[in-house]
Image (cartoon, rainbow, N blue to C red; front, side, top):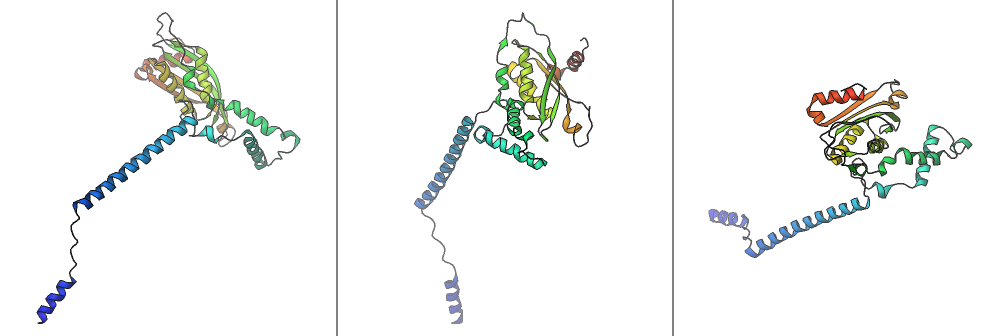
Length: 264
């Protein structure tokens, strides 16, 4: 009797197995999964379209790879920029309302428009016009001693110096002044010397498709002379070699010899 009761109680306590899902239920579950995946893909596509639309609105030069996204939309007004200068003057310990500083905010904003005008220039477009009638000239073209003035992106203090550019033309040559304009375009942005050197080489290589490009930049950084270690007269040299100049060390020697005024 006890054994029978135990058997009955044991059977009553066992969980009742769930019924196997019907085929229609499985199909509904699969349909929901597929629909969910489709919704996610649609949301991703919509985000990509919206992002592309934003890029179209805040269009920037293709060569300005370090310009923040949406800068054209988020750019402060002139009044806001002048107010920021007044704040810095007060922080420095001076009175922006005294006679000598009354017009300083407006002057600074105007100066910044020129000093950082490179953000508004498409460096690629500067090199689009090529002169092909050069009587088959294919030897080195060197423009040296191009002066520039830039600003260190770490302290916004000037650095200045000379840039030297050489290339081996293939489909033609570009106007010599255009190379100087390329240097100015990248120099008139918040920069590091290393990045600026690479940007100059990049745009020449990308647009002119030369057999080789060489760029040498030498500069003095006032952030090193006026603050920090305070060592004036120190020169920093950066180089970029592409194509024939990278592959052949003798081409590098020729370039450096010409830059220093020797004969190659």
